[in-house]
Image 1: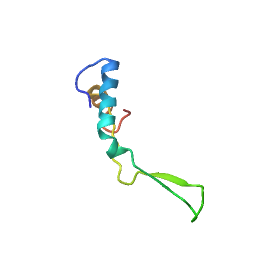
Image 2: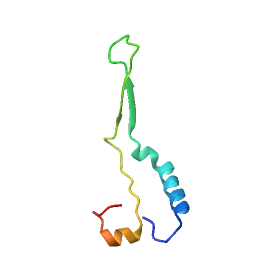
Image 3: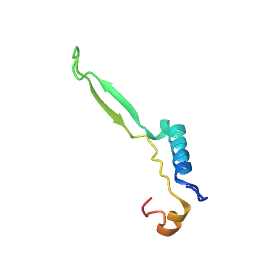
Length: 71
């Protein structure tokens, strides 16, 4: 949550920094495997079971809409 008024560029830079520093916690784990023994084709999926969602908002929006409002 941002508590100070900052410009759009500064806010986006901070959001991107938080995303880079926390990626291992929200990105999920990528898995790929061969569906059949000896197959050249691979199947894949991303498992988000242990991922933690990261949400970003401003203090003004939180005050206006509350914790269940739009971010």
